[in-house]
Each structure stands twice: as structure tokens, then as C-alpha cells.
Length: 111
Length: 112
Figure 1: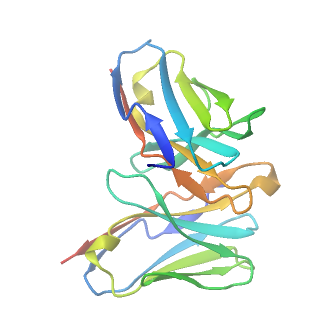
Figure 2 (figure 1 turned 90 degrees about the vertical axis):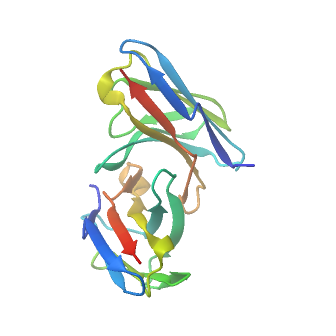
């Protein structure tokens, strides 16, 4: 039931790009992305709704393919401040469940 | 002022003690959640409440109980703490339209 994320961890140099993937075995109506910096609470980045639209936040964007039940987070020209753990999440209230998060992808951006 | 607050922020206790973690919110949301975070395991849901009279078990509710005292307050209790309940605990709220989760700062609990 928990979404699957890949990769588990990635190390980048400043200015490099990265993609984080999230997939679900259940049909999704929306996908959320959160970032958690070390020692802090997760913070909402963006929500993707059905329709395959892309959203953006700074130089971070995401896409959602509801047919494939997949979402991808794109980090372009990464900055040191992008370091942290990224979680995808989805509400599954329609399945009589609740909000579920993926296990997270740890991103480290080095100078 | 923070929209979601948690007290205490840190707590060290001994095995067998009863512990209560408190959460308050000023966002006006009906939905509130308690999550537990362990290294490498992401966020796991303990309990959630969609309104004052609605409380539901999450993925890992054993050993925990909750109380929704008001729309703005949601408390988590460990009836008899054990060492494997050592973790970082987050309270969150969400709006009913998108379920976007807004987290409190977390409580670091250590059970010796």
C-alpha cells in the first residue's frame, strides 16, 4: 500500500540535475511531495492532481501520470539548500484508508 | 506563531512510564494525525482523526492511544512506554479538500 520511491539515495554536485520517482499499486487521485531537512519537520512542496499537469516550486518541478500511477520530481540545477529527504505521499481515503507516505529519497548536494 | 505546535519537544523517560504528547493547531483544520518516524522507515501513521468524534487507528497503533479534546487539540499517549517506542513523533493537520499535510516541529522521545 505504501508508495515506492526510487532511488533510495542520491548524491549530487551543485548545479547537477536529479529525478526522484514515486509509484503506487493503487489508483491515485493526487500525489503530494514533501521535503524534510535534517532535524526538521517535513514541509509540503507541491500537489499534483489528475490531469498530468506539471507543477513547479523554485527549480523543482513534478509530473503525475495517473494512468501509470507514477509521479516524478525533477530537481534542476540543484542547490545546497535542496539537500534533505524527499517523500511522496497520497491520500487513500477513497479506499477507506488514510494518507500514506513513501519511504523517502535522501538527496545530498555537495559543493 | 507556528500553526501546529507540539509539546514537549524532547522527552526522556523510563520503561513502564505513561507519557502524553500534545498537539495544538490554529489552522482550523478538522483532520489531525500522529506519525512516528524512525531512521530509514519514513513516516508511519499511528492514529488519525477526521473530526472530534471520529478517531481511527493507523498502521502502528498498538501501544498507543489518542484523545481529541477539541478541534484544535489532539494528544497521543503511551500507556506503558517501552524502548522500541524511542522515535521522532510528528503531529500533522490537513485540509479536507486536498489532504495537504502540515506538520508540527516534532517530539523526540527516548525511552530508557
